Each structure stands twice: as structure tokens, then as C-alpha cells.
Image 1 (cartoon, rainbow, N blue to C red):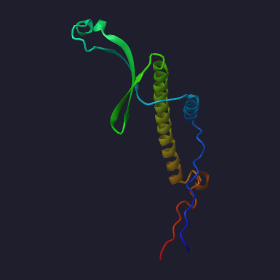
Image 2 (image 1 turned 60 degrees about the vertical axis):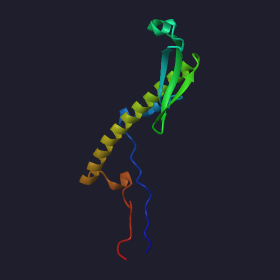
Image 3 (image 1 turned 90 degrees about the horizontal axis):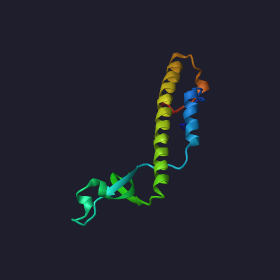
Image 4 (image 1 turned 45 degrees about the vertical axis):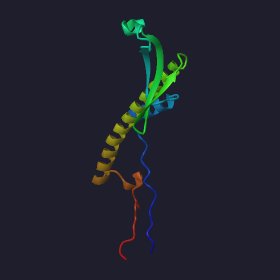
Length: 140
């Protein structure tokens, strides 16, 4: 008899209202970008310019979006009009990461509880889709 493998178990719906709230937060997100938007004031190349003597006389502001790709920092210059858009997108990315971290923490707690109930026999295996999971042919 050939070995067969059942489909992965179906997880029960998440009854925790905190998980549902975090899921709803994900639905509210707009465009997002990882990285940081910087507002920089720069010194110029003229040695006699006031920007070298007095920090309040530096040139700018110049806006820059920085992010990492394969361990390397990428810098993108932004116009003053584009900077607020990118800043909002980086804030959305932080909200995304926070919501996902919260959902993972809640999932880890809930799954540990469900696994303990399944081990104790107080949670029916059919309710979490474990019956027939990874059935393999025994013997030769």
C-alpha cells in the first residue's frame, strides 16, 4: 500500500477578541515601506561658508529615505513634497510589524493551550483536523 499524506490540519477559528482586533488593524493599513525618513541639514563644500562655523546656518532641510537591501543601506533623496508620504508609509510599516508581532504572540499562547488540551484528550482531534495527519506506511 503506498504511503499517503493528509492535508495539513485546519486550525480552529481564533475566538480571542485581541487577535480579531489585531487582524482588523491589518485591514486598516495603507501603503507601507520599511526604513526611515530623515530630515538633514548639511554643510556645503565652501570652507568660508557660515554653515561650517554655525550649525544653525547649515543648508537644507534635505529629506532622505534609508532602508536596507541584503545588508547594505540604500539612500533615496526625497523632495519636500514627497517626504510626508514616505514618512506616513514608514509609520504604517511599524504598525504592521507591531500588529503581526501581537498576533504571533497571541497565536503562540492559543496554540500552546490547544496542544495541551489535545494532549489531555479534552479537545477532540477531529475539531483541529489532526486525524490522519501525516499517515505513513509502516513496514516494508
